[in-house]
Length: 377
Image (cartoon, rainbow, N blue to C red; front, side, top):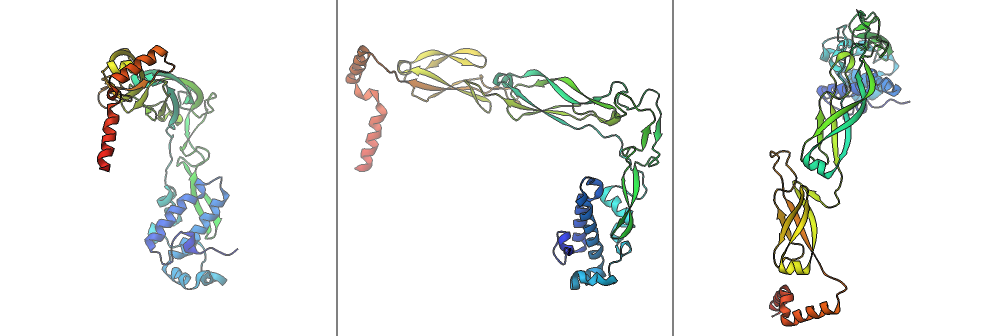
């Protein structure tokens, strides 16, 4: 199979600078390094291809020959010859130093990772419209990794000794020799025996098998403040997954979803609703009872109220999360209901009313036609 162009392998154009070559190789080497792609056999091949491309293009002489002749410049045993052809000047030493710069390992240095903190968790919680408005405490059950009660999270039975790992001698890393295109090379990986901690437990806890954690359910009380809305995220510190062997726990993030209400709708801190009245109440004015989040209140309908008019009830909206709990208002949209199925007597009364002053029935209509007439004149 023919080789890919070295510049194409690194994602660069021909003539790329040394700095561009180094940055491209560093980025792609991190992505395809075998230590972080243990379950992907293709990554090792891509890593070898990257390393070969960089070995050629980072050497000024070899790069010049490749730019002129391509892969033919190194065929027949006259060119690329393995690890000794790699220019390490940009990394201050041998092949182990490049991994120290790129991946934080190598060089025989002790770099054990230690116990890792626990992961954060997410919990989606649905609440009612009223609970979102006024706040509530909710008890939720979360299945997660908890600190083992038997060993208190240490992973060891009582009085068990913690010893230096015999596999890595306490460094947390082991050196692995591999045959590559450059010859035999050493790479550094996390010690499989101690998982990078540099220490092992002689007598592990039997309940958690030395892990220091057990998966189980836990009831947690979540305090939901007044004024939250769909999309609000609450952080419950320390209630995520337990860390390894006594390391800090992660956090629990509760995402809120508010149920729709049958009567109210929310716009920021204001609450909206629609209330029906009849034409007599709209014409003569009235006092009606209106539901609010706090209970029923009396609302005065002014004389001559028009359909879709909006009346305000102050302080009956949603508390603000950011403005000291100040509440919004309740906005009441008036819907005037036109009666159907009138009796003969009712029709007679309405006709008499119309005959007494027809213009009074629709004063806006007269003004509308006057505007049309003015435009046509």
